[in-house]
Length: 140
View 1 (tube, rainbow, N blue to C red):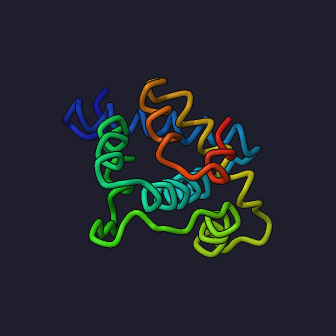
View 2 (view 1 turned 30 degrees about the horizontal axis):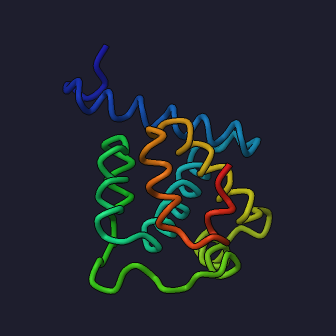
């Protein structure tokens, strides 16, 4: 049974829910909204550290709904961020997430595990290659 009346939209919702479920399992969460927010915040931090062409390559492999919030608010003119330290990357996640019970490093590692699972190995390697070593070390 179609929820939206369009199979493409139903498929996008289903794929996004699979990603959220994977993240919820990795984090031990039952809150789908919390998982959505974690995925969104980490994808924004990742996106802002990638060159524009790699942002587009990664975006092309994301499910439609995830792709939408991945690009939300993106201003490519001043990207990638030149900050190369893992601590600054994690501070951005912590600042955006605003939940003292959430370890930003654990969240980043869990989102990267979800990406590892659902993206092609070539895309994962392409993304990792573009990241500074300290940030790359967060990938499984």
